[in-house]
Length: 123
Image (tube, rainbow, N blue to C red; front, side, top):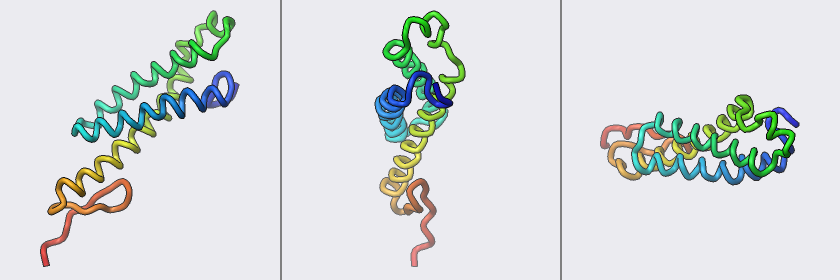
């Protein structure tokens, strides 16, 4: 048992980082492409955190942990959801920066990976 994982590192890696992390990245990208506000991304990522906890509980915890109620562990829910929120927020911001620079190219230009800036007056 570690600070970030409940059973072992590989269960954490495959469920939280690969499966749920991929879903979080797809969620962040989809929310940005549909021009949804950021608060909706937070709500959907919190729900994805619940799915992540269920997968950990159902696939990797033994009968002893089931009896102790590890499914409802607030600490590991917050850890997993924070990681998923980080991934979904990064995908959201990268996609939004690309959108602003391409769809409003006469107003904005790309400024790094996560941002955009106003174009100067026409020369």
